[in-house]
Length: 194
Image (cartoon, rainbow, N blue to C red):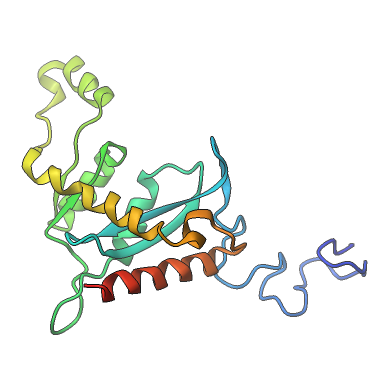
């Protein structure tokens, strides 16, 4: 087998890793095989899924490819969530989750209900239509608090503050691990600015 990752062509046994790398594809351990870079309308992009507090400070990050849906990354973001306290361990369960229509699914609402977290997520038009078509068997729509939902802009403002750093806005790094480290450093600056 010819190793195409190096300039000099040498043979190696299949399944044996190259020297200096933890796995055979040349990526460091913990690095996704696609480096969290994927195709979207704008070209090669990375999608940042994040949770922010009420003061527009980031709490958790997850990176996916540009064409990936938002909903599958929700549980990963919630698993990384740590709400700091003055004393003791950080909280892993917020009081309320404000999310846009991309996160309006039965699985996400059930996940939040099991953990005792109040969800303020608007219903998509197609979900409303399916429920109305079913008539009285469609069930009751989930509760939606319009006043609380007005605070959802904090995550958008947090994202805009993070993108003030050129390296985050343009993603020059090849590996997702380095890009995620840059996000954490920018988050530290946002936390220390207050």
